[in-house]
Length: 201
Image 1: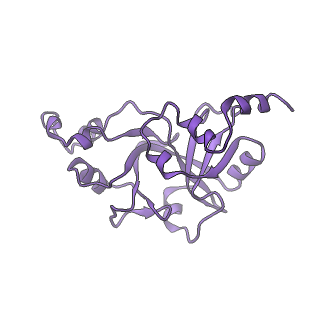
Image 2 (image 1 turned 135 degrees about the vertical axis):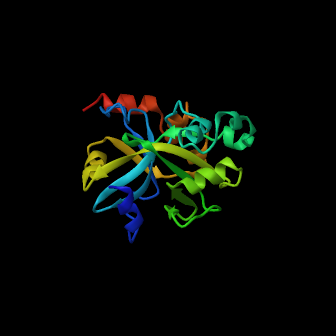
């Protein structure tokens, strides 16, 4: 599923607003030990963002790359902008930035993905964040994760993912190292339990 499909969706699908939590047997290393927030699911496929993979770039690096500031101006950025989190959202369009954020910020290009969370993929939100005027809660993700029609359903049936309702606190939590374990704990399971289960036919 593409971003344009997300913009044009008419109703929410079964996996909309769900977390996908990778099972230990998942073979694609892009998704090993990942937690993914599904933003859109329909007959056309699904789209979401990995929310527990760090990114080496900083928000300052992004602003410099976009020529929105000069190097000498980076020290006068608001502290909140300098600390703004950047993560790796998935392997599709990995050079493109997306901002998942609370609905207290909105522009003409913002897409609601739940009752409380929006997605904006244009420069206006980057400018707002750089000036300290962005949303209360947000994270930038480079790239996204996408599934073709029926692909995600098939992966879930074949024990590739656990699913559960998304937790907004976890989406915007900046502590990434143990987010996988905490997402599992929210379901009442541990990674050790899953490993043991995956080892038995």
